[in-house]
Image (cartoon, rainbow, N blue to C red; front, side):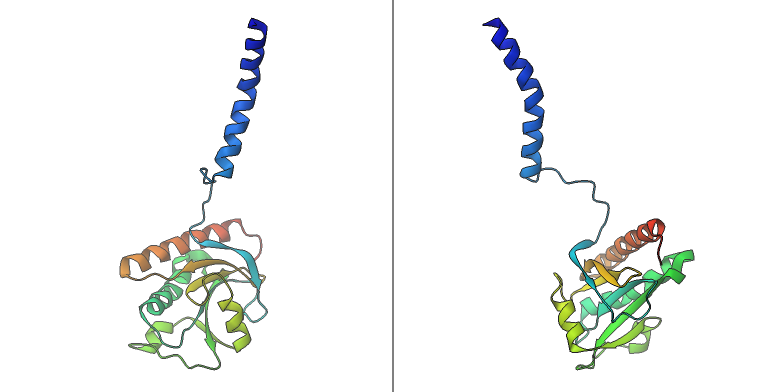
Length: 182
């Protein structure tokens, strides 16, 4: 009897950690070492419509009416490339404007989009972006090969907009540091 007890104790000492690890992973109790602040897109969107290949790009689709979310996105599009510092020649901001709709900017339009490249895009491109998880309600990061790969859902409120800008800047600096392209 003592022989079987020792064998069971030894067997459970090796099997118990494996079973517990399996449970933790299956029940999503463990959140892995995620360091990015934005949402990685499950299927990156390959784009041939982005302007400058070879640069990291912040991409935003201009809505028909520019509300508080839009103004916050435009603020981040202007500020992030400047905040990157010495690497700012590797980053650009792109404002996509649908051909079918002319957007209306609140306040002074020139001050909101100054330094942001504007590209007129077809309805096909707008529909492509709207099929993504956040649709037109996010700022996206596109890699130098033209793949839209990361999203930052738009937020309301000055502190939330500033926090989103910091998160976007942090992720972008990390991408620039580890990237061999662009």
